[in-house]
Image (tube, rainbow, N blue to C red; front, side):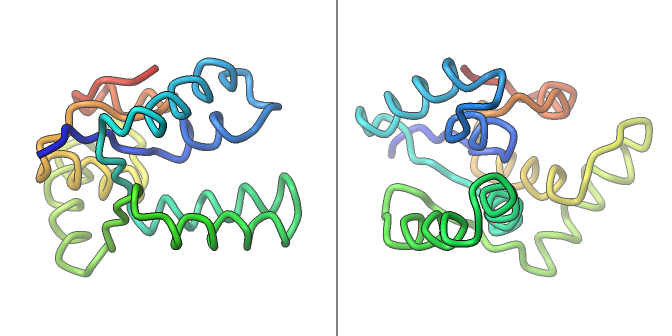
Length: 138
């Protein structure tokens, strides 16, 4: 089984948006990862929803829909759906015990997916991932 890389909104959008200050490094890492096929790219439908909103805001409605079309036609990206049970696990494992952090539900579900799939790294600029014990790349 291939090692996995979690795609967070912060790193993924940086990779796709030339205006983001982290764009050059994130884009190179994302492109190299896709080209090499060395990681299973994992994300959640909650992250996809955030990405769609950002793409629509940054580039317009057509670009937002194009992002979704390309993503759902692509088998390289594994999208985990945030079921009720997954969200409850995320709340119990990440939101309740880490009350001193401002983790969002999207963060908590991401962390729980990473934990359950033994993923240690995320394409992210969001320091919450580091606070939760995960490695940020690039």
